[in-house]
Length: 128
Image 1 (cartoon, rainbow, N blue to C red):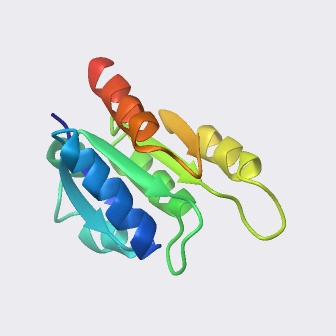
Image 2 (cartoon, rainbow, N blue to C red; image 1 turned 45 degrees about the horizontal axis):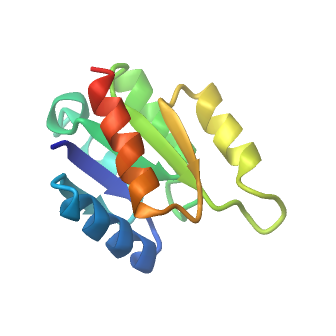
Image 3 (cartoon, helix red, strand yellow; image 1 turned 180 degrees about the vertical axis):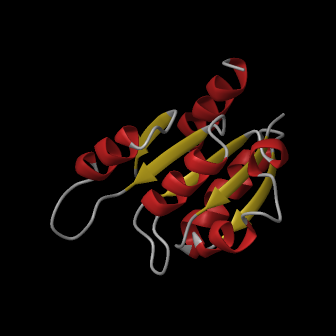
């Protein structure tokens, strides 16, 4: 079982992914924006509180790339999985490549099936 922080702005995706992770025995905390991370830095030790952080990249307010940058700068050992369905002008590949450059541990292109998401979380746990 992993303690997972799931950051996803789309409510339907957020609830779908959270339910799937919970059915696979993971403990899940959800956030609807990257603002959760920026607001809690210094209050929560993300590296100790969560085993894996799963974040969408394209979100309003604070996007996933800023979340990744901030977490990696503050908690370099954080295990982060970035996911993206792409934007209006391009597919997910460019955003996922940017996330890799920021140091994420894995990337997933949306739509993501629950087995693939759980497998990615489990692989990060087994890499500990």
